[in-house]
Amino acid sequence: MPVDHWLNSLSQGSPKSIDGDLAALGGASICYPFLTDSAVASQIELLSGHLALVSETCRRLAIAYSLYMRQMDAIQDASVRLICAGSCDRPPVGCCNANHHVILSPSDVMVSRPTNTAMHLAHVITGLQRSEHEHRVDQGSALTPGYCSCLSSSGCTLSLFKSPLCAHYLCGSVQESLRREHGAPASAFIEAMHAVASRTITSSRDFTDPGILDAWVLLLIPE
Ligand code: SF4
Ligand code: SF4
Image 1 (cartoon, rainbow, N blue to C red):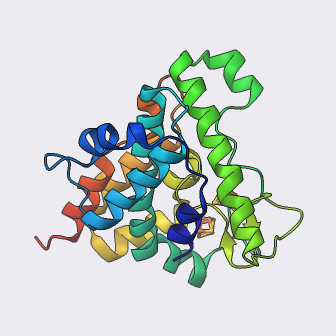
Image 2: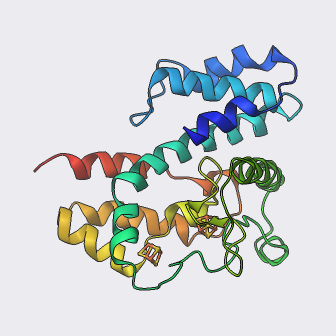
């Protein structure tokens, strides 16, 4: 898988943070309903070693973000991407028409004044985006000039470090399709996605919403 290929290519620093990060993020009390235990452990280990010089708080936030995004990626694969591929009403590139991977622009920083932790997390994620993107390009993804700089002929070059906006955005057509397919239970999922996609990032809590994963699980349970 491209994600594992990239993770395994990451340079590794000191391993001394790994055990603590595994205990904090991979303990039995933390559930990742869309991931296998081995995928979780391997992802924590490889990112922990790679981010060994980053502060513990920010390193763990960045790893937690990647685990959340991997689950969001599974949800997108099971739902949104099929709709995007089959019936996007904004051809040729849908909503990937600008650099939506940017997490905090200079004007975001001026206007919303995010906390130092949020700024640091955005900085770390931006570096990881660059690495993930460059790896996909090195592996042969051909970029599509004129739109988002992460758009390639095979889709987005980012998986684990998409921006909160990209990971949570659902256009009107996708929302309609989800409501048609799943009925009323789709509403909680759509509302939670919209809340994060439209949120102004001021703190590290604004990057994700674990309630979205629960809303998707509930949506799949027949009434
Ligand atoms: S989310 Fe909507 S606009 Fe974006 S690619 Fe999918 S169908 Fe097209
Ligand atoms: S980062 Fe990926 S999902 Fe987001 S706009 Fe660019 S190509 Fe699309």
